[in-house]
Image (cartoon, rainbow, N blue to C red; front, side, top):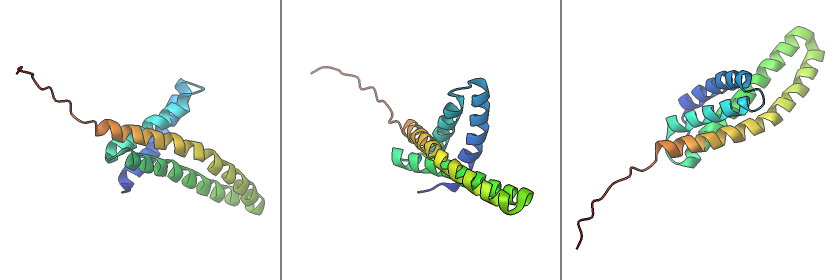
Length: 129
């Protein structure tokens, strides 16, 4: 089941953590931020690994769609039809690139939901026969 509140939180966390970690760790920081955002989404929704992965992936896809839509609007407002054409091509590249983001956030979501639902370890004392 999709938890839209967790998806929205994951979207904002992916922007914030992805940006912060990309500055701190230039090469892998952005991916680490996205993985942590996906883990937060998975932890919020709980359930099984598939539930966390679906919600994490939706947060990544949501970000790609919003970014592409904003790019189309800005390109059209600034440069008219030429800006629309350039923004359309750029948006297609962004959507293809965000498939990788979706995969990273889905893995993070699966990890987060598994961590939340880790079974308790029960210690049983053995008293002998």
